[in-house]
Length: 239
Image (cartoon, rainbow, N blue to C red):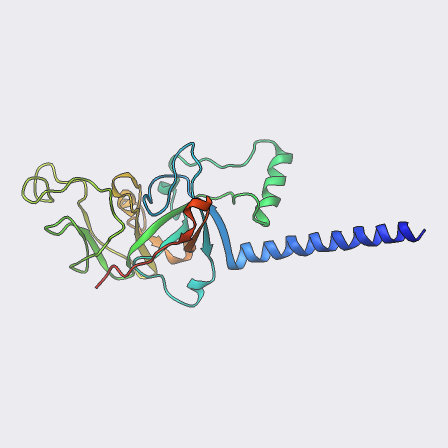
């Protein structure tokens, strides 16, 4: 009899612990931070990802921007702000109703990816700033000042007077000028020649910019794979 009571007590304690753990996971994932998988190479070499491979898993801080404003140089995860960003995106959910329900439940506690198009890019300009490319050296400019972007290793060719913004055809680096609306940010991938970022959505209602309300948070850490462990730099790129 004592053994049966002990077993029932143990089962109840385990059940309570599981519920507490799930609730804690839900609260953390909803309000504090979340792990996201990098699906593409648009942020190489800072973040690794590609079709059919194991990309980096990053921790996104969902609290910081409640107390501080996003700044140029931050790597951010954001929800697709307009339909133009959803081209080629398909929901990861199963067509099976039961499986889809379980997936949605799993998303609440962070064991399944959310059913939304989340993207990762780097902020290069913020509200009221004007961004364009390029200066005589092929660098992005914000309010007429060239950015210092040490993280870029892959970009379109640019040669002054032979392939720049005045030649025909111009360098594929060239864009703008775009004045960022207040409350929005202009984002670009570190892999400039393989990133459908703000430049690719200049024709949408936000001229390619992303409302701050659509930012999920700031990318802080690479947690998987172990060989890639480390912090994600947010250098000062505007001087």
